[in-house]
Length: 615
Image (cartoon, rainbow, N blue to C red):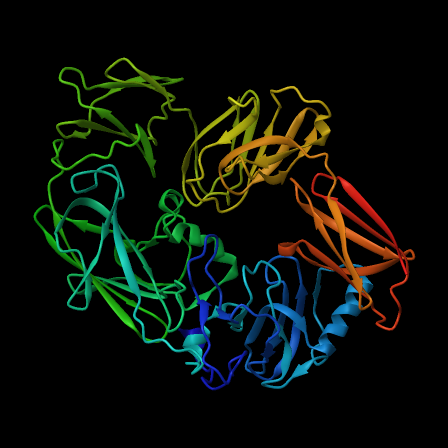
């Protein structure tokens, strides 16, 4: 916690409703879908327009206005070298608002990123900087508040100052633990795979009462969350220690966040399990490709090895920023790996991929239990790796053989469609007859084994499928494909993601010389769709020298807008969540009279133009 040294705990005041008890909907380091949450989300009881105060004396170093992200946001630089950030604001204070408005007109843009001169806007501690709101990517009214260190790393406000406005005497809640076999020779309950174990609370501690039999290299994961007084929100647990036979083995301390490593949350948590169950498990080991630096202890990178007949007592301590603590206890026993097991084998699917291993599940046969795997280079016969009375499990090392088809013991076949092995930290390209994929050296956390195909589906929709969304991507993948269906006006088509076919997501891409080229940041299915419907513009009201309208688009989404009054550019403020757009004059005394025009374009290039005569 070197970043916290030298910071006076009384340096900052609470930035909103300082005379009341406040409640949080998000804390520092909370595990979000694509990032670690930075700072605090402070509830405003569903209201906008509450005064937001400067937490300490300083000058405004940055002001940002955007339709997404932090929305209306102010950054204050303080004499002690730290910066505080106030996001999702409804309004800035009048002086700052006037400065922003002039710059929006100067740049003829609603979105701006401004860096005022060092002493242009000096704020005293407790001075109003704006009003709380719901701007940007906020999903409800609240204030997002951060404290950043000397290098703009995000610090935990609750560990700097125990704000009396926030009350917390609730220890973290622990729901379940998962044990994962980390290579083909490892087993949990005699099987390869990942297994979840519910916890019960006994004598003040969360426990698994039964001893868990394991062998080989095991990874430990946990699903836990923290709650604060007066709020039901499930927040993050920043501090987790793991002991093995009472010796510290692994320690996680999310005490600061560097924005350059935000995407590493996809490897800090179990991405594949989260996509399958929607539950975000915190890994208690450092996986390949994880460059995060908040692991204070990591014996064997947190992986646990248990020899046959060896007993290992596993303990966990989970602690929140207020020092509330929960403990977990479980026992592992080492056993010899066996081909015959007694436990039930999950058979919901015929194949499953975990890391470098393909699992194939088949009913046990009384005579023939071998299967045959094929690819372009040849074939091989595989015997069951282990089995019980009803089922066989075959483990295939994808580093050695990428199968494209399997023939089962009953003569049935299944297409496996493995296309290529993509190594991490290397540039790599794959070329097919109708499509190609290009991976940069920063695209992957770890090696992936993709199943890709380009086809026409049952609904006669063209689909480029690049695996399932089960491997996290660190960067983007560049793809090109030659359309295999017939299209009229193909230049009007664009690439869309169809993870959910009912709600296709605009990706874009460019059509040139018979090919579509685009980039994607998560694996899945992509298609071509035509959007030739222009955005809809509807007038709502003209009052108080302001015109208010709604703008919507049915498929590709709003890309840009521009308004003019009597031929001169006029600022239109935009709130995408409500599809609202409204005017603000630079000269408030100038009447809103004359020829008004609003041009709106969608991402597919369709434009709408609304003309009104304002009187």
